[in-house]
Amino acid sequence: MHRMWKVLRRRWKYLTAKLSGRWEETADPKVQLEQAMSEAQEQHRKLVDQAANVVANQKQTELQLNRAMQELEKVSGSARQALSMADDAAQRGDTVKANEYNQTAEAFANRLIATEKQVEDLKTMHLQATQAAQQAKAAVQQNATVLREKLAERQKLLSQLDQARMQEQLNMAMASLSQTVGQDVPTFDEVRSKIEAQYARALGTAELAGQGVEARMLEIEQAGVHSEARQRLDAMRSEMGLTAGAQTASLGPATAPALGAGAGQGTTAPRGQSAGAAPTPAGTTGADDAQAEGQSVPPAASGQG
Image 1: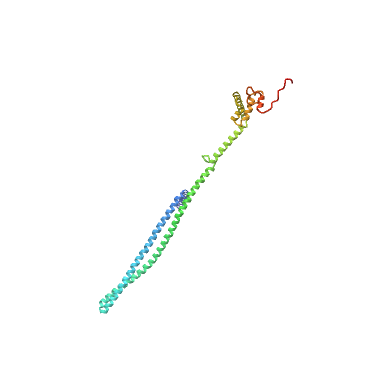
Image 2: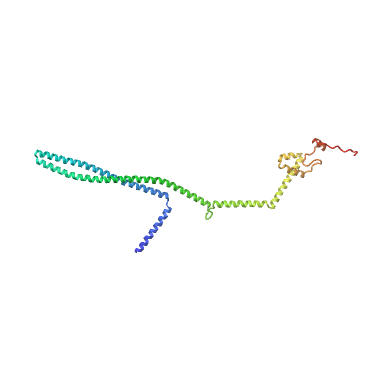
């Protein structure tokens, strides 16, 4: 029975220690700090109450000592007065009164001795109470200083606790960004890798498609369509009597050479006129054109040969 009780007590202590350890791990430090500060303030209040009782005892002893001193002076004066009256009665020859006054003086003397002893005891008690009161005041002042330091440190600890919690949240956020395994939601690194892989695959597909035969065939077909369109435009200009300069001015210097080449292929210039030149008006000859340009015209051959 004793052994079983010992085993049960040991298990109870083990469970108590285990539960206490778990509670310490899950307890909020801010709440624990407030509990510690409340306990320190309660201890300071109790210390102040005890010191107040000690100081009150010292004050009470001082009052008792003052009353005893006054009583001592009063009894001493009464004893002196009785001795004086006894002496006066003896000088008058009144022995009865003299004996009565002497007895009264003796009673005052006994009372004076008791009062003196009480005064001595009260002086000792007052000295001890005064020392205890001084120690109590010093203890209260010291504990008040410690309490003020704890209050100041409390603010510092609360600030450190807030910083620690903020740092923990930041660490958790950074860990969630860098973690890649064991999460229900994809992480930032996983999403970035997926997007980069998709972008690289699209670039590679586009590059392979540009190098294929179908791409070149499409390019050739587009070039044929553009050439046919230029030829049609050249034919319309010829019918309307427009010059090639209007074509160059309207299409810009970059496309003028290509259009000129297309006009030479698509239309047939009249005799004596280069491809792409303006048509010669009726009633004029090539000689007139040459003279207009400032060139000499060779004489015609005679019929005589």
